[in-house]
Length: 190
Image 1: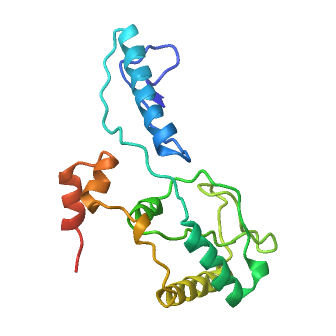
Image 2: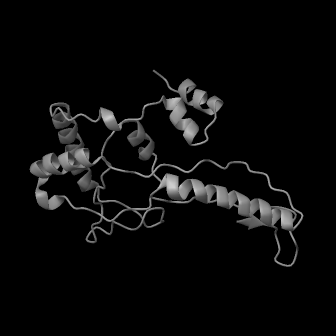
């Protein structure tokens, strides 16, 4: 939140920004967005102020691993790098663009353990102390390659859980206008 330059002067402008993290877009995210907008607009109106929204996007999608893909990943990656290297973490309130890929194609989002107290790594994300143990990157590559190669040979059918629309229609559910989507396409260098 940003407002004014001194604590004893009422500022003419106030700016604020933020994000919201959620596990259920439909039941929580969409109602939250509408309530937030109502609250901001009605509070401003009560004080004779106006509101300008520079950006007010639709809520994102949660990262939801496909259960079949997740079980398959545990099986094949565990067989390659060891079952003891696989764990089931608690749900994480991340804001992750991978969720949009998972709307298009079923898949698995994994955490790569980078916490190594002996090396001083593993601080929380978005923190000046965050660092990672680069030695684990080889495990991440191994896991990704093993999963991809064995998935292609598996015969697992995920077509039923894929997004039925187009990519621009998916962006539209996030409130991204057609011109912005086109700029994404225009920026792709083939």
